[in-house]
Length: 639
Image (cartoon, rainbow, N blue to C red; front, top):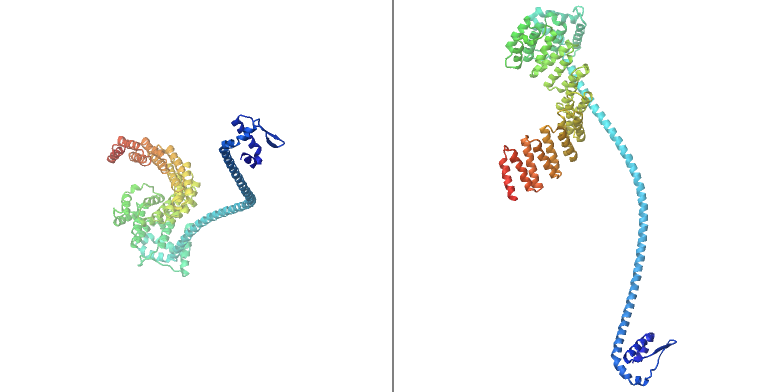
């Protein structure tokens, strides 16, 4: 059996014989020799061969089990070896599959690399095209900017044309008014002569010289004894009026009866000619006649003021005394003209003027210019214009023109007022009222005419011409207000508020402008950081003023709270109490606001109680103290 096993596996025969020899040696204690000669293994016989042969069966029995176990072990090893070989073959298969996968992955990577190369070339092309597009966009942006500049220039020209158009319309309206006046005056001389012949008959002796002179002047300058260039000019005007009527244009008189059919032009021409011709020394009587005519036309204020004019200009004449008697019958002490009469007419010394007609007339205008009745203002405008016509070269001409403009304002005739103010700028360029007039024109434009863009332009022109004028800060504030509230250009408004403070830092409007600027930054320009800086500037520059300081700290606290800077907000609120303890109401409001932040936002009950105790300890007269104590008690229960 052993030999059969040995022969069964000749491939491992040598190793197995060695193992068997070692086993024999261990069992029998004798030496078993194995030798190999030229690759063949032979068994060398021991000295006791017979013993070996006799005990073979016993040896087989002894080692039968061991050999069987060894066979089993060798069989298992063989099975394991075959399993290992199978696993190796499987690994080779997997390696082959992995190699194939790697080859596929390599191909994919190569394809990806090719794609990346292609993408790079596409990117280079896109970059080049984008550069071209950017250059085109840049050129387009430059073109848009140039178009915008041209549009702005056109807008500015449009605004200028709008102003010119408005002024042209005003001039046309004025020309139309003058044309209507001229139309009303067509051949009015015949009506004047007819009316004078009837109405002046009561005082024929005093006024016949003026009537005859006027009548003769219409016929011939030689017969009329025209002795001055002024008379010649006015008579020529009257001749033209008569010729205009004779051409068939016609005229229209207002009123009903023979004595009341007197239009406004008739009165204007009559008054003007009375001044120029001096009425042959009968001017005072003519005034009283004119006053009575006004009353016949139910123009009582015009009549009363004309009587008053006689009293002013001729207080010591029979006409002046007669005017005082008539005036006292017509007016009442309680009305405005009546009070003026009792102040002046019954107290001639109160006039305090010299004997010269010029000063008496000027003083008369000064007295009546502030009367509130619309009819009185209209009368003053007429008298003021007549005064300027009669004394064209006086140094008070700009003052009188300003009074006329103010009378137009009282009548709410704002365009006429602006025209009168422009007349001062044009005719009296050295006037002391020039800056005031320029500012007032802009002020009327925004407040009364509500032409906001034109007003902003006029304020700007005023500031350019009079930057040091007392009204310059207010003009700048008004201009900024227009841009903020009317034009809605918040950036421009903010710049103007800033300019006001920088240019006029000591003016009382400077802190107001800064507050308006801070509000714009917060509400319209979305710049809370900028607003914080402005409020800090107000606090450091104008903080000595309690109102400015408390408003600035409240602004700082509000912005801090809105941006969740709660600790900073509390500090600003409590700083109101520290800086301005006498500002009781504002200080208490600020302390309560700080306590609210501690309780609701910072969740600090102890700090809330401590803050409310500031009110209890420092403001005992606070009307809401009971509510404060009750709140403290509720908070203490939460501790």
